[in-house]
Image 1 (cartoon, rainbow, N blue to C red):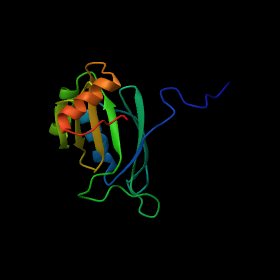
Image 2: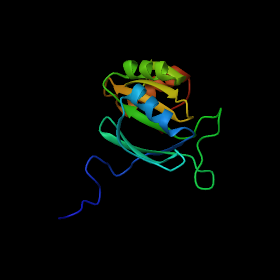
Image 3: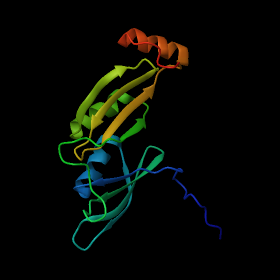
Image 4: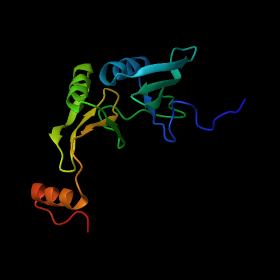
Length: 157
């Protein structure tokens, strides 16, 4: 039997989030983003050593923080990393995330690059951008729209 170097259901890049309460995070990601739990490996003390989730067609790993090895985002501060989530209905998923306990970091908008787009911060300090592609916009048109929106000079040249 041949072993695939990238397991079925995974892509080359898989986010691995560290949180302060893994069990609560799993429930949040299920409620907010429709995550499906694939497996859970708890330690004898109840902390999660490893969990695999699927959101849409993508996998995500999750673990509780172990301060000697890995830390969750500092409480009260957003992570400098944003996870981008493309979905069929950005408004519906955005609103579901808010109901589940996320905070709005950027309200939903029709973005100049053609997406319906907004950002939330989950209760564990991780940032998520949520989007649905609404139109194909050329680089030149996106640049024109961005300049019109911000009064800035060209963003692409």
